[in-house]
Each structure stands twice: as C-alpha cells, then as structure tokens.
Image (tube, rainbow, N blue to C red; front, side, top):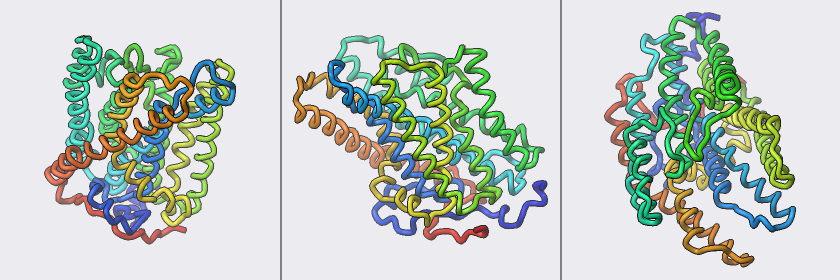
Length: 413
C-alpha cells in the first residue's frame, strides 16, 4: 500500500494514554511533542533507571559465598537498563517523524526538533558537570578531571573518545546524541520512499549496519566507558532498532491490542538475561558468545516490552502507569546523571562494611534515597522550567503539544 493509499485513520495523530488520572504528577509532566502521551513509557523508564541504579548500588565482598556472588552478578546486569532507554528513545524520538511521513508532509523533520533535544539533554548535563567536577577535583586534588569536563561542555565528547573517570555513565549520552543527529538525515533520505518500505529499510539498517561496524571495523567491540568513553560510532545504534520499528507500526496503525500480551515475554527475556549475569559472576567467566546473546536478548526484550503500548487497559500496562514508577521515569535522566558519583563518594566516605549488614543496608539505601532526592530537586527546580520554556518557544502552531487526558478509542481490535 502506498502512502497515498493509507487508511484515513492513519493520517490522524494518535491519541493514546494509559491513564486518565495523574493528579500531582501533572506538575512534573511535560506534554509530548508527538501529540501522543504514552504514560506507560514513563513506567518503563522507571524500571530502566532502577536497573541501572541497582547495577551501581549492589556490590559484594570478593570473599563471599556462591549465593552472594550470584545475587551480586544478577544485579550487576542492571546495566541492561541502558539498552531499554535506547529502545524507548527509538520509539519516542522517531514517532513524530513517522507521523509526518504517514501524513506525507513536505518537511521530514518535526519543527523545533533540534531545540527540544538540546533543552532536554544539555542543560542538566552542563549543570551536573559544573557541580560535580569541582567535587571530583577537591576530593582527589587531580586537575586532570577538568579536561574531560570541558570536552563534554563543548560537545566534543559526543564525537571523540574522552577520559571515562568523570561520571562514566555519560557514555550513553554520546550514543543518544549520535542517534539524534542520524535520524533526521535518515528520514530525509527516505522522503520519496513509502512509509511501509521505509519501516523495513530502517529496521534492517539499524540492526545490520551497527553490527557490521562492531565486528568488521571495531573487532567486536561496542561502546566502552573505561579508561576512555568511546562510542565506536555507529556500533551501539542497533539498540534503537525495535523502538524505531514499533513507532512506524504505531503510526501506520498496524499495532493490535493483543500485542500487549507479547510484552510479558519481554520481561521474561530480561529476567533470563539477568540470570545469565548471575551465572557469569558465579563462574568468573564471560564467553564472547554469551555476551552477544545477552545483548541481543535485551535488545529484543526491550522491543517486546514496548508492545504494552498497544493496549493501555491491559493489566501490566496499567501497572506500568503506577504513579511512583512513572515519577521515577520522569526524573530518570537527572537520576541517571547524579546517582553514580553519589554512590561512589558515599562508599569512599564511609568505608567498608566489615560484615555489618546494618551498615551495608544504610549505605546502599542511603545512597539511593539521596540520589533520588537530589535528582527530584534537580528536575523540578532546574530541568522542568527549562523544558517548559523551551517547549513553548519552539512548538510549531500546526503541531501543538496537547496533553491526552483520556484513553484513546482504538479503531482496530
């Protein structure tokens, strides 16, 4: 079916929400640029940030028993939260592009796209660097931390390798920015290609090209974060593939309510991948084939979990809209930026637990609570006003960012 033969309901902006009651969360919420409010995506973000935080929070004594090693390895797999973030970005970032393509609009890129990405990513990054870099220097008396901070502030670290000691989690930002730059170019190049054909081209391209570079150019290496942050462009962009594809299917109205049940398989695959990291910790071995299997498992799992958007009334979809989980998802970027330095400094300041369960719980729990509190203040007082001001300034009149206050009536069962 060509784009001119698309059904009429495919030419309308989607209006789908997983919850019609937000209450106090409204004050923390920024209306989406796609005219579509997927509340449960915030919940998936909440799960992703909990995974990442657990990866850095939970640590074990090297002399501990097998069960402790397995549990520690299981939580160490929380780094899988990052591919989930990438998949969600693939969906949310490309959805407005797909909507414009389905409507056959002249300009492939949504108005204000670049500015919205800038206001979302750069101000919190810059603020965290300006606050944390002096603390790093004062604690270590090492002025070499200044160089990577300047590189990040100037945007050089999005393109070239940089010292990874300064908040290593920032490696994913380089990948995100590369994705933000690539997407408008790709959609512009496919302007004369139908939406249906573009969907398969993008899915195949984002799966095959990054893997080809990873194995043929970089010897199987994906992004690294120590001793240098090096994204090995475009080796990590395959993590966005299924999010991109699902956004295209959603715009074309191919998604069916029954797809939501597939999301359960995504959670099962994610749990399987976490079990495998526990096995690795227990046996102190990580064969290349297993690392590759883990990567593909999590990439596929993230895409499957996104299928919950197909039915906002599905039980798990409603659970993902739980207010605490959505709130964590809303502040997830700020929490991502601040949690690791706080955890590292807390551990260094209070020293080893020497077998004290109480001290361990206090150290881990206290670090998490402090990280969440600081991230919440950071978002509410700094990031949110900037996002709201930037959104008002750069939203095009023809594409208003309207909140969705009721679940959509789907045209397909």
